[in-house]
Length: 469
Ligand SMILES: *[C@@H]1O[C@H](CO)[C@@H](O)[C@H](O)[C@H]1NC(C)=O
Ligand SMILES: *[C@@H]1O[C@H](CO)[C@@H](O)[C@H](O)[C@H]1NC(C)=O
Ligand SMILES: *[C@@H]1O[C@H](CO)[C@@H](O)[C@H](O)[C@H]1NC(C)=O
Ligand SMILES: *[C@@H]1O[C@H](CO)[C@@H](O)[C@H](O)[C@H]1NC(C)=O
Image (cartoon, rainbow, N blue to C red):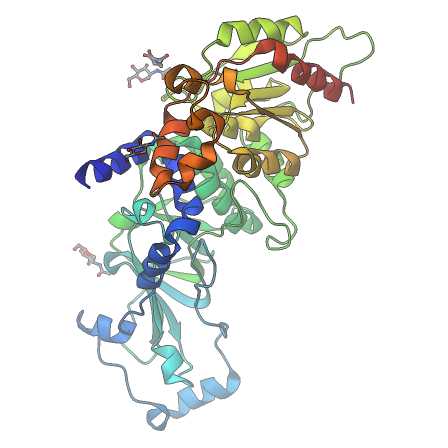
């Protein structure tokens, strides 16, 4: 048991993306556990007012009969902007509170308070929510470091916290945390949700970020500045009461690496790509279009990876790529490289080739019409690979090819032998009791790929054909 726990901790550190996969694939296997987790997470909190009273706020006044004429007036005039519940906890991945009116943020006590003059419905007014503003609901590992916030109502006749800072623009509150450190997760769990939630304000919105990781802020500074014209507030260090006309707690998640235009007011992943190019001043809007005389060489970025799911014959792959008339570009984002700098390299390419993994997330920097080739290792990962990187590629109006390796291209053959079920039938591994542990360990963390360049050559030919169109 102890060693299993250690193993789990170990692999969430090595490559968190896989843990998330386990968690969502695991839905079949451990759905009960997850249900308990997410139900436990939403156990309603004692009402905000009683919670505040421990902080010397006065008790909530009684119901309707105690209303002053002024309050009755307010009710009849319906002065509150907000009519719906403050928070929506129905989404699978993210709880969102969206409050319009008089909203006060007291970061000292991690509370966000909607001040209302209408006390029409005491039961409603006493509702409150506890929110972790990071879109991986139910994923305890991802949320473990995320500050929990409390959202609730307060009536105007109570001793409302005075505004130290009054803002005329809305605020969005969200957390760093989760599996940041893995580029896929940084983009799918935060960058895209922050974009979905904030782009419509055209910069006229302030971010309050909790559990800040300074390197994350540095890495994405350009992007954050493009989405917000205002200073970023470090939620956990803020000691003043901030008042806003609107506050959104949490960021909206649709699908991994994807934006659903039906839920985003028409904004698509293609728009996201344009936004990224603009943010990082990426010059190439569209990939090369090969003409009849084929004088120019398309550039193909090869993601080598160097710890897990490595290409073990990168040089041979590069030669094959060159042989088929491409200029091979072998590059990988280095820890302290600027993202803008790396984005330029990716954008200078017309395609990307890589084994399934976070490096493929760089496709967000590619020009329209570029070709993404995902190499799928053994393990029965095809549909998962497709949804992570195939769908976003197509949504960004690029072309997508998926290459499933043959068993001889997997390092698992050397390790287990060609007749072993691990090689021949990964489903058997998964079907064992707690099989997902072995399965993750074997196929994600202990498998490298030696691409069979002659088997693969038809994919390169196809890629050239696509760049002619
Ligand atoms: C928040 O805490 C700081 C330090 O404890 C204190 O100086 C400040 O007055 C507090 N602010 C509010 C609004 O409670
Ligand atoms: C991975 O990259 C690091 C730093 O660039 C290097 O020190 C290490 O040897 C590489 N590992 C492998 C297996 O290539
Ligand atoms: C990377 O970081 C190291 C140590 O923090 C520093 O010495 C080096 O100059 C940095 N390299 C780049 C390219 O920023
Ligand atoms: C899976 O793990 C168990 C122990 O947890 C081990 O006994 C078994 O041999 C493993 N199966 C494979 C295919 O590696």
